[in-house]
Image (cartoon, rainbow, N blue to C red; front, side):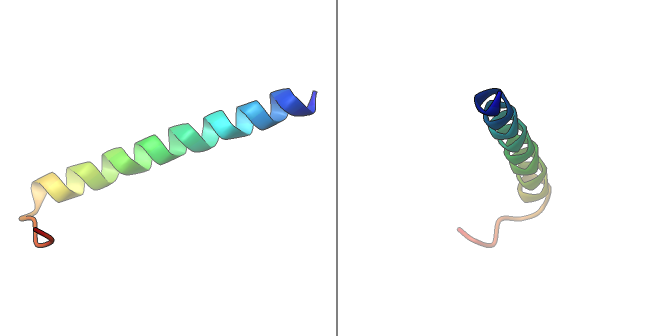
Length: 36
């Protein structure tokens, strides 16, 4: 039971991280890149 819960938490955090990365990607592409 605990392994299933852990896997679900890992999956949720991976999805959250991916969506956050997508949001940053949109911000970076819509603004001039000052980091480069």
